[in-house]
Amino acid sequence: MAEGKRGVRASSYASEGVPGTRGKKGSESASGRPVYDTKVEKKANKFTTHYYQVKEVLTDKVLLESGVSRVAIIGGGVAGIVTARIFLDEGIDVTLYETTDKLAGVWAENYVGFGIQVPANLYEFPDEPLPSTWDFGAGIMIGNYVQQYAQKHGVDEITQFNTTVQEIQGDSDSGYKLVFEKAGKKSTADFDLVIVATGVYGKQDKFIPDWKGKENFQGEIIHCADFFDLDKTAGKDVVTIGFGKSAFDCAQISAQQAKTSTMLFREAHWCVPRKILGLVPFEYATFSRFGVACLQPAYIASGPFEKLIHGIPGFLSGFWWLVGQIFKNQFGIPKECLPTKGFIADFWGGHGIIPHPGFFPLVRSGKVKTQIGAIEEIKPKSVILGSGEEKPCDLIIAATGYRPTRTFLPKAVKELKEKDGLWLYRQMIHPDHPKLIFLNSEVTTFTNITTPSIQARWLVEMLAGNHKLPSTEDMRASIKETQAWKREVMPNAGASRASMIQTHQLHYYDQLLKDMGANIRRKIGGNPVVRAVKEILDPYRPGDFGTIVTGEFKYRPNEVVKAGGQSSFWKEGFYFVSGVAFLVWMGGVFKTGFKSQYGHLKTDDLLKMADVSKIVDTLKSLKSH
Ligand SMILES: Cc1cc2nc3c(=O)[nH]c(=O)nc-3n(C[C@H](O)[C@H](O)[C@H](O)COP(=O)(O)OP(=O)(O)OC[C@H]3O[C@@H](n4cnc5c(N)ncnc54)[C@H](O)[C@@H]3O)c2cc1C
Ligand SMILES: NC(=O)c1ccc[n+]([C@@H]2O[C@H](COP(=O)([O-])OP(=O)(O)OC[C@H]3O[C@@H](n4cnc5c(N)ncnc54)[C@H](OP(=O)(O)O)[C@@H]3O)[C@@H](O)[C@H]2O)c1
Image 1: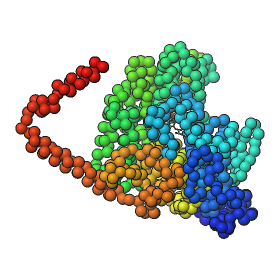
Image 2: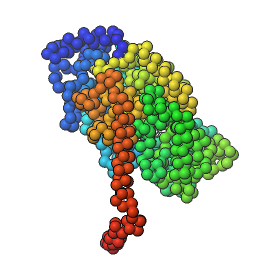
Image 3: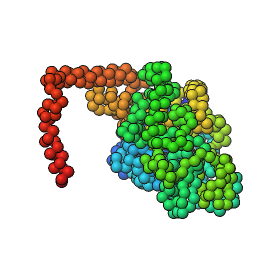
Image 4: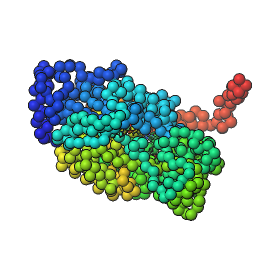
């Protein structure tokens, strides 16, 4: 953390904060506000119903090192919840502001039939596994799970519900004043640190294009986030706009009752199947170290193996072309839904759709119509497309995404936003505003509980001085380097470029773990060969980061790594190659042994030896049962 006035004042508290000299009166945070009652010895989460207690809470260190005693979190989605949980566990005074009457953010309420588009073990709190029967689970189930997690860790207790933050005043040096509104009444509160966890796909930011003639429409126009009642579609001509996951789902579910269901879009994007070729779960290709290493372009901080495979001319371009062909044929994608861009070029536009397996069969059966086009004008009972075609329409579902505005940010911060986004150090911190943190709100990844979980742990460890922020100049230099890289390799990323991480998320997690001295090799257990195979081929899932959330990693010798001490890839590479070589050798031995023993026999003789008739009899008897 940059040293300044605050560092000095915070340090003056140090002599009071050391064990044995606690509890002196008059202790205050850097901004002069009273701090936690330092007489209380045990400052861990007092609201939790959970048995686990942090070994050594960070309260004092956070105050000492960063002058932070009061923390505000804006937003009660998974990001705000997991951050509040971690801060509460560390005994830090935190208040969460949530504009609705519920926690869980997008999972509290969404369009009819919404759910996770991934297996349960990819969308869970790292320390709270979901049952595998919840794969691709319904949104309501996920919402309940998220709310239970919040309750278990006491997050409800520190949440101000129905409270909208309207303004953040002040700056990182003087502290922040939050102006919030509750039941029509405005109030303020002071904080040393403010965490913006307002998400990117929330209701407050829903976007509906300003179509010409919409005031004359006799039907209804709703954003997908407000599409709660399927009966609205009964007997209607429903047109869903967009080619994102929301559009797919809304067009698909509307087909149950609508007279016609059309998905109208400007551009098609690549879809990813739940299982590649119906066999391999997609996460093996996207979230394993091998899969991530193959992603083009290579990450800005990539390892030697990645450099190697990216150095083979044409190899990865061919690989991704093949992937596109496989997906195209596996889905039987109709012509109009075939993207014009290649898989990688489109991927960096920020799209990632895993359609419900029933979607394309419905398109083929004609129950869902997919059409390229855009609304030119809305008439009372129809829409006119750019092509001149007039389509009967009673209900328009705008699955047209979200445009976060964050009007509450200080003017100076709002002005930092460039055409391609807000550029932050580690996707969280602007060097000029180190006490205004963006948590999961300026980053796009695909396992969106893991990301804020790791970010929140990184943050609290940084505030406690367990790892340091680089100097302002170094942070600027790091941002500049990332900016130059992204601007060169992500031409289609538009306004989301700064936040774009996508499936390079594992690399991003590695960076955060390295910063805080945690082992990035998290496939723990088993012998070195099994570990190496898992490290390379097994997808990284939330569960691999459980001890990061709880902070237990700091007490596990095999999870702590000193700066510059991460085990090198070559060790794993060696074990992996040795393991494979051993298996090949064993296969050879087996083959030779088999040949010498049975090589003289013909296939018929071998079948006789296996006594096939017995197997047939067994199968027959099973069938008759
Ligand atoms: C339908 C749907 C399905 C999704 N499925 C997946 C998936 O399968 N996998 C995946 O990884 N991601 C998925 N996502 C992305 C999803 O947004 C993230 O997974 C994650 O839930 C985001 O959490 P969050 O806490 O960052 O934001 P949100 O859940 O958006 O929470 C933000 C909270 O901030 C509150 N808030 C906003 N402004 C204010 C204010 N001014 N004052 C007070 N409170 C405020 C909001 O009310 C909200 O509760 C999905 C998104 C949607 C919309
Ligand atoms: N787990 C799930 O099942 C699930 C469900 C829903 C959402 N999500 C996630 O939530 C996020 C948001 O998804 P989303 O589908 O709601 O939004 P999205 O991915 O942002 O897609 C928005 C769509 O609207 C189109 N659009 C935008 N402006 C338009 C305009 N003026 N006219 C016509 N079309 C316009 C875009 O078209 P262009 O591409 O042409 O710009 C795009 O196809 C994504 O990360 C998604 O993965 C997940």
